[in-house]
Image 1: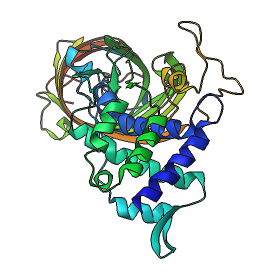
Image 2: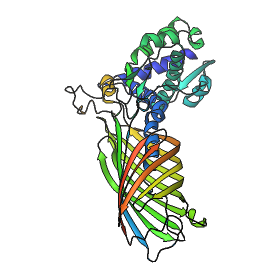
Image 3: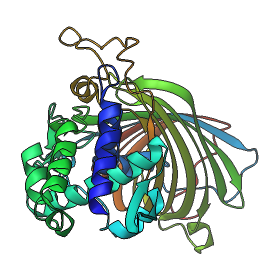
Image 4: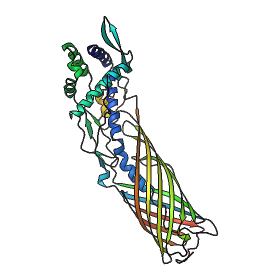
Length: 436
């Protein structure tokens, strides 16, 4: 039975190999491996960006801890706020891995892609008539061999890879060679059961499948700092409660980042209004934010669409020093959930190696032809990432009339400095330090 399987597979593969310029079966097997490589490393690749976005987006909510208990006329504070931080070396790298999934039962797979029949009183396995049957069975067998090769140490996985912040062009996961695959194949019990003709058939089969020598990991964007700016409006005050609104329409800040849009709403409530005297200022705040990001990446124009939900809760403490200066600090609990959908094709160099694209001039994009049309079947992967951040902030602000400038430092897994300049319409009179 095994012999019949191998002969049919070999015939199907040789017919496919006759297609111009490239072998569709080798291309599809490479797609399968690429998806495993991508999904094994997508989270550690983007996680540093997720962490820094969490810390950065949850900054510049306040420039003092004071919220008036009541006002004669509603005030509107309009501000522009900037945040910046240096990206540490540990955020630029991660340790890559490869998860090829759990072992599969070959017998169960055979039932999915063909049928067992009795021909001339002998059990004979017949592969299904479609290409998908051939691809499915070939993928099943190849992935089992790749798992064997991984166990034997035939994959070359780098010790480190660049995160989105780092930069390591040409860093790749080296795939097993034909000789490596042959070595693990010849240890399989199915192979050992074959007679010499059967072994010759399967050896010929795997010699027709030429996979690329390696799959390149994302090189990173080579970022050393993160800078952001956001406009903000605060409206107050009702029963010592203030409304915060932030909004950024879709805009491209940087070609490495892509089109970014953002909005946020929050409420801040005065706790010190319940004290008999105003010894110091205290308030609590909750903020909900949403961001979207779309980008087109690299020579193969892979697509990224990401949506993030960001939530923050903080407690602010402050003290008025004289007539024009406030000092403040805050403890914050911050959480971000990011859902990223990637639509991607094989890397250009892999398409060239497989014969899907012609060789272009150095540094240029390959131009598809009728015989070498490129990867026409993009794959999609959805990646979920999150981060919880606890942050301590300390700052100082100075005000004169309706104008206020603020500077603070934010300490967490990603330290940032932030600046703010605001103008208040219907600026309320500041109360004395002792009472409201």
